[in-house]
Length: 389
Image (cartoon, rainbow, N blue to C red; front, side, top):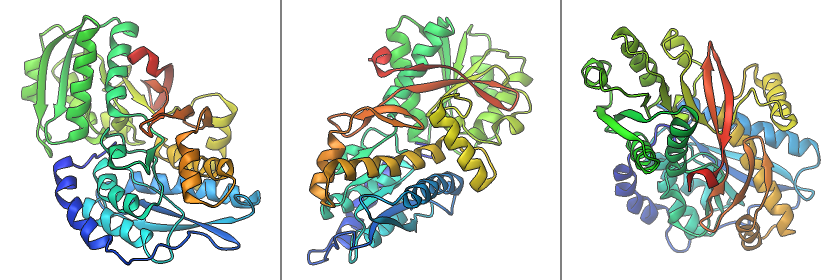
């Protein structure tokens, strides 16, 4: 997902981490005792994506607090063990090693960035510990083994859903794409959007890219301007998106912009200074959803942390309740039985929607398409997997 660290870096270091962290003879504890079950959380609470990790951790801790207040899981209170991955794939492997050896955790939760999850997954797979990512969207994450799961949608679905929304809802016939060539998340979404949009009969009239750290997008915008695009797909992160939007408007390009979950940030609209008014992006949920499940969560989160929860906080919250549901379905604190329960999880109702875990251990769920109005992200509609397939 956001700030998806390149697969090349992740895969280049994964073997060294496995060799260092999974030596034969390392004993794995049961992950529980008479009174407690130990859940491990590995997220970035420092480094470039610290805000993502902190939001996730907040959501996890709120869920743990609620569950413990109501008696725990099958009579055992949750003890959360947290490791900071420092926004670095290598540190992600180190964090996984700490959680997966000795007096081990019963289930591991994490990470946000796909590159970090890719480094951690082989370690938990080797130790037989279920790993559930709340928000790593790269398709290869759950391909690391049969004990690796996720509760978020994948980038191929997200890119395709944005294309469906552009073509069917916004009636766009022509689209332009502006992506970050140095980011796997951005290039992946661009690829998936293009494939679906053209399959639907749309035309890509311009494809432009920029390098990581770039702050001047005027050349790319000039190349897009005048091509007749009805929509401009910008699969980038919120800090870049705000700059891009302002520079589009400065060149008098009024075409709506469209993006993915990387747009979500409390600072997006502030930094864009009105340039994103009326634009759209896809996300894991909407804080404006009027359902009891969402509004109960939003109220509890605001009470505890004094701010509106992001989708990462919601996914962190959901991943704990998914773990609880799987343990209760298993009927025992037995990792093999919990793995079977996770594989058979159906119609789980979370803050981020109702979903089931499919045969590839991925969540089959809808995406919420949101419209920017002032500093609010208003829900337009949800797009289900069936519309994209």
